[in-house]
Image 1 (spheres, rainbow, N blue to C red):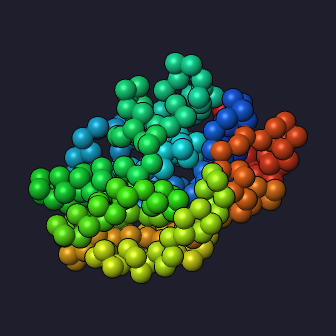
Image 2 (spheres, rainbow, N blue to C red):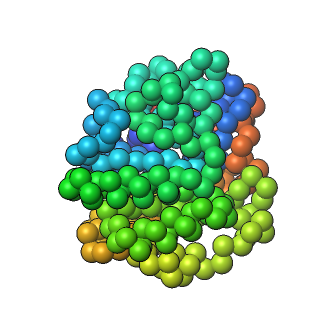
Length: 281
């Protein structure tokens, strides 16, 4: 396991990857990717028992599902930087015949990707099903998933919340990126989720709040607390309070960066704010 300082260096490099990947093809979703960097690094460097050799079945290891698939830049960077595929492949992001599609897909057989997640609202159902499968197979490992708060406006999520609680699926940790930003504006203005913790708990889940989802230690502590709560009869949800565009001052907490790449001047500005720690691809 890496130290906090080492993981902070990984976070800086991952953010550089995100900016460079999306700029290179002038498309993609940098905002939410930047906001979820600490979570993804904590998950793959500290929390999960996972194997970069990659077995699609995920037997006897922790597995992760990215439901809000548009933040693929952070997912791809973390997978590459943790050994799933060569870092140099990041330069093919969103290009023709690349395994790194704008939204993760499975038919390219990219290591680390177990489900296509271009359509929002489906990931929790998949993750709950995988967790149920592990329980039925007496597999003691956990299932992790990540969801956008705007994504919870999709009704299928709430069916999955109900199903998991009804069947006491207590080996899943579903994290909600609570950044109050989606492509059309503030989540509270597009369709207000209200008291999200109260909603999730009313569906029978135990919830854990991480007040600062861009503080690496707070994220690790929240995930460790969630792990400790598993196996007690209830599914676990983490409400992760992040800021879209975190780490780049002109993108910070601005929903307009949900799905817009930086131009040349903005890219230079952003990279100037992010230390190159592991070497650019």
